[in-house]
Length: 262
Ligand SMILES: [Mn+2]
Image (cartoon, rainbow, N blue to C red; front, side, top):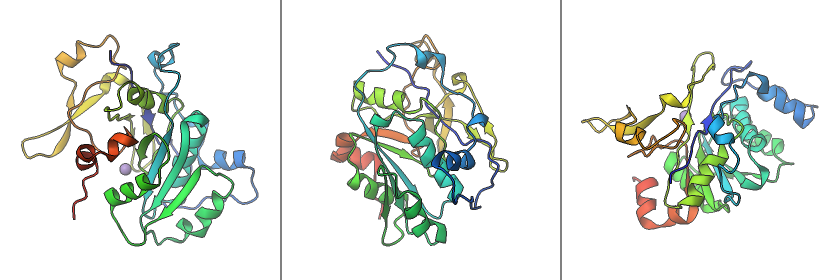
């Protein structure tokens, strides 16, 4: 029996714009977080189906969250990491691995190290040269200690309840690679556009082998009682997903998901 996925990653409407620096000196951590992203503006996107008792297995595996970045804006990067730490059950987050793919902007250097000094779960790994996304991801995976690898972009915001459905799918079947539903962010205002799970699509290709989105096939819809249930997808966009680490290390999976094209 397939279970239910409605994890949402979103970036809230922000008072700051991309690329700026947020002044964080002499603030408590809580105050800092309020400055970095405004929780009140977040819609609670977790569907009722996911709140039902017993929806998820009790002993979920822990995950290493791997976030690769290259010159990501300061507040955007912090917002991503804080949302992971604040909106996930702590025991499920083994660590957050920030892979710096050879950034050269000043705020990605010592300032970033100092900011996370008192947060032992955040680890920063530096690539010695520009590697590109996939090799940066592999670098993160090589340092990961969690049972599951969860990859996020460096400009996400996770909502409460985002993680459990991803890990639950893998706990039930470690061969599953799970993608969350990703809502749309307006690229000029950073406004978050909520869509309920009725708007979920599956990934596919057109005849030019361009990735694009397709509506969920009728035969798949018929298997479901609730539109918030997980759907099978023949492919994925590749940005945000969770995968069992042991599986990811096996050759067929490694080739499929982490192809290193030289
Ligand atoms: Mn992105």
